[in-house]
Image (cartoon, rainbow, N blue to C red; front, side, top):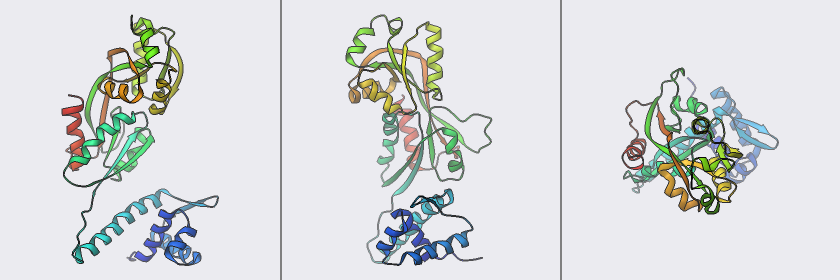
Length: 300
């Protein structure tokens, strides 16, 4: 068994944090060839490539990202050890790494994650975003993520060891700028026929439910735009480009943040929210706080 050389790991970690060998050499006061040689030796020991070169920049590979996260922990522990032995122990924050499905409103995510900062100890939150749920599964099973927030559960056909924890469900509220809301509030839902409308893209669970509801109610709003990024949809809605759907439970928050008003509420278009983890019985204190608060306070 070959032991890991922590000097090599430290040079790699510094390059990963600085973004280039040039900046790392300036910080470490070492020649660039020296640093590059040490990283090549580390790659040889680990048997993986840690960086890819894109133009003049170094970009971490998947293995490099895993190594960088481990190095964060290792050198954080080293600093904590020095502080403890010198009589000034530091309080190491609890790390919480969360994957956030790209379709979830950022307002909702912020509200759901807030209880993690009130568990009686320091928390370091790391959010991974802008991916569909399935793209997080490798990191989740590899325990690089503590949980994934999603708008749907994992399907039974996926062969992964993960569990769906329902946070709650609510109806859907259509919101719009004050002028637009005033013109189509009366007579809802028939009043939104031909009204400019902004919708989530097709891979959002709520979009499929909305399309079915439009058919059932025989209403046809004028689809102006559809979005993967919900925050962009709300920004366009604030500017009066169209009415848009939001989770009813966060209706007041949306009205406050985006200066919009209620057009109408649809109880039948249910939106469900999940925390997905590898633990059937939740162990992480921050994850447990998030799930408990969502069930008892947010969606109660």
